[in-house]
Length: 214
Image 1 (cartoon, rainbow, N blue to C red):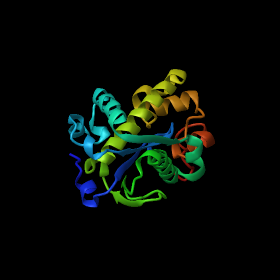
Image 2: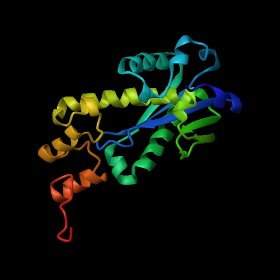
Image 3: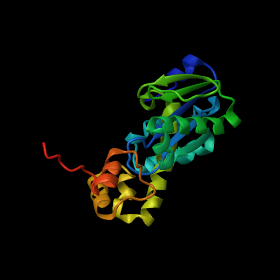
Image 4: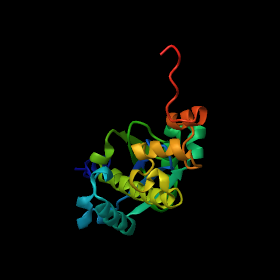
């Protein structure tokens, strides 16, 4: 379970930053940034914060609302077009930077804990934390905000694009999603730089044809 060990070691105004949505074939990549004030750390809901991937949809919604109410936070995204232009890693870092800059207007952060092994270009000290959402409550809180926001966005997009199953797979390459691309084509929400989408655009299928040599 995550805790405040890393935040306490730094002993300053520390926020957590995490992103969701690097792997999907469709939709934006989204970053969350959260600062949990000292007086908020003792509230009951804080102990329930953990990696967003390990929480039910109901619990995510509950914690998302409480984090928004009691913490200083921001969410930012980079669109599929942004991802195609700069690549998914750079788009993730840009979303992190944007979320931090929005949140920092109210927080005056001096140190940021970043999930993963790459850091965005921020105006404060940073520490990259592998599997940070399992170690830092601040990072885990950021992951909850980012995931809840992105999942909700993809479910809304599924209303206009029902074939792809985005209400359940949120853009990841599930069997339903891949089969729907072959039948119905792609949308402006798909990431054209990702291999299955490139293959569809080039060959009319998500799988390239076998060469004569094979």
